[in-house]
Image 1: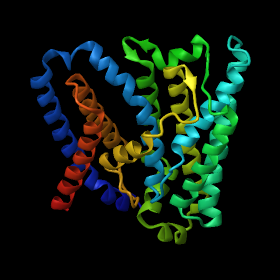
Image 2 (image 1 turned 90 degrees about the vertical axis):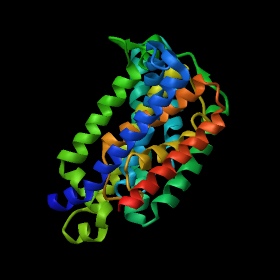
Image 3 (image 1 turned 60 degrees about the vertical axis):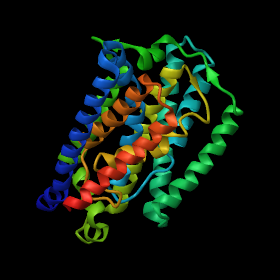
Amino acid sequence: MDQVLNALKLPTDRNIRYLLVILVSIMAIMAVASGDTFFSVANLQSMSSQMPLLGMLALAMAVCMLTGGINLSIIATTNACSLVMASIITMAPDNGMVLLLALVAGLVTAVVIGLLNGALIAYVGVSPILATLGMMTLINGLNVLISGGSVMSGFPESLLVIGNGAVLGIPMPLILFVFFAIGLWGLLEHTSLGRTIYLMGSNEKAARFSGINTQKAVLYVYAISSILCWVAALIMMAKFNSAKAGYGESYLLIAILASVLGGINPDGGFGRIIGIGLALIVLQTLESGLNLLGVSSYLTMALWGGILILFITLQKRKA
């Protein structure tokens, strides 16, 4: 199995080289266009504090895509976790036990949603795109019902520090993202579940015939995806000091973009966490640089899509 997995991962090394070339090109252009402003400490800190939220969502998407699936409910799950936690916290914002209860309730919410997604896919036989699309629609309705469509705000400083604090000048959201990215990398590269995920993405039928319990693996994968959404919910709540049913709706497609750009095969089977990290840096560097130049956010989205098309074209030429 290890030989098969190593063969499957070979293309991602080329992806990383392409991403590094694109990143260096963007930074060179921004250095000429914006001068020292782009590389100022304030701008770099701003970039590093904005990237982790999207990064957590991209990880949540990528772990499902590695199996050949997808999770369209990541934004709905993130908002559900944040609303559940916010509804509890606002009962007694300064009570530490209430905060702890809220965190546990948010985590339980995430795990339940993940297991429901996994059960629909693994045991009922619903395709991942339809199962998670249905779950997304269901959760979005419940989110509006829970919140009444309004914003919940007023969180304690002990929670807000997650989104706005820093350790030795490094933003807390970035520390959280790096911690969970390394954890997911370790799971994928050095555990039997990780090897199962890659093998399922390559050939689920072969994995099943080799004696692997693929149904249980799918449950684990979607539960892990939802837990990453719970972490994203914590970052989002702390950063905005609020929770709302409609937050982050535009992040769904960007999370898919970051995963694919990072080398995750949409059909499953290969991809590396380091590729996602580089893809996020590329996207954030381009967005921040264009913001400094006063370029429309719509053009930024268009350029993101252009980079993805260029990236895929380079892959196909070398395939």
